[in-house]
Structures are given as C-alpha cells and as structure tokens.
Length: 135
Image (cartoon, rainbow, N blue to C red; front, side, top):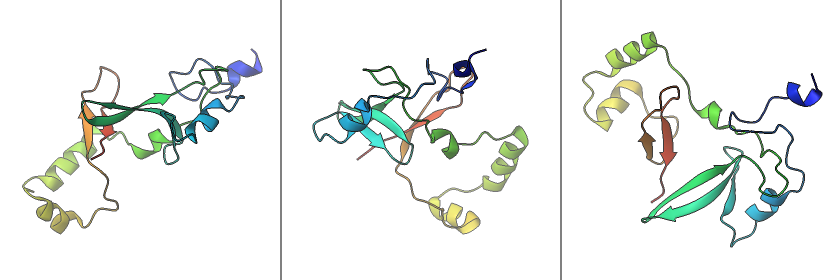
C-alpha cells in the first residue's frame, strides 16, 4: 500500500489527498473581481453566486488548475448528530414554548446569534444541511 493511500482525503468528495501546490485558489480569493472567496471560519474556498436576488455559494474541493485538494473544511465541527434519546429530551424540554421570549426565559440567551439559514431536505444517508442566507 502506497503512502498516498494511507493519507485521509479532505472530504468524501475528494479524489486526491495531495494538497494544491499552485496556490491558484489562494491567489484568486484575494482578487476583488474574482467569484472565488475564502471562508476563514469554515476553512473553505467557495464560488459565490447570486441567483434570483439570493446569494449562495458552491464549495470548491479541488484546484481547477493543478487538481490538488483544497484545505480540509472545519464545517463538520459546527454540527452534531443527536441520539433518539437526546431528541426526546429536547422535545420534552421545549414543548409548550411558543415565542422567542419563552425560549430565552426557559433556556437563557443564545451563545451566538447567527444569520437565519435555509434547511434543505436530507437525502437518504445524509443529515440536513443549513445554507446561510444573506440579506
């Protein structure tokens, strides 16, 4: 088994574990006219898009020039999978809460106040995704 096969690929979509060597993504992301941006929080490069007045992005997994892998994303650290028992506990804890004020009174202020997102239906073996929207 070669050393390359022992290296973990950055994402399940990756076809290579070898990182980008040409720095195209890094250089393109600092150009003001480029649709490529770097999201420092997620450690991801994106292609920004605007369609029907809504903003969004496509994650870039590989450099289009050298084929090297983009940096490993931190996205997975922002989501958790919960057990059925935890889901039931949370349902019981939050039943009867009708307003934001009710939630804050019972659970306290949120640790962070994130922009609202759009949740997409989950495919068979994947959890739902929340795509942030911008106003």
